[in-house]
Length: 155
Image (tube, rainbow, N blue to C red; front, side, top):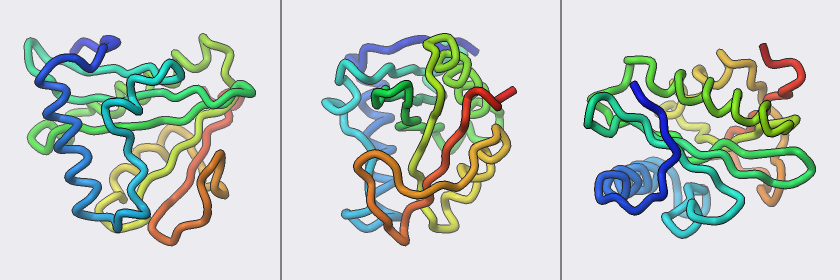
């Protein structure tokens, strides 16, 4: 498995991100969908990675720097046929190590509160993320779960 920074120009990643956006829209009401589109992911504050197994795209994720040494985990997605292989865990680990190397102190995230998002919440909990209040520009939303990881405590 290879994790690499991606410029979001390839058709494979564009297609995977569209699946991600469509999936989020099918589960959450529009006001509760916070996934970034291609333009949002191309912002200077965002580093975007893809995960490849041989020549097949098997996952993606991003880290958005928020300022004050804080960041947000964004756009985590693994195609359905590749779930359960540990791809997301490897990518989250890679992103945490990158954040530490950048001397960031905290990673926060927003994910869904619906049952469909339980595997994601469990994944993040396994890395030490804990539930927290809304951060940044987010506001309380019953469809959202907010989590954060203090990088000084992350092993």
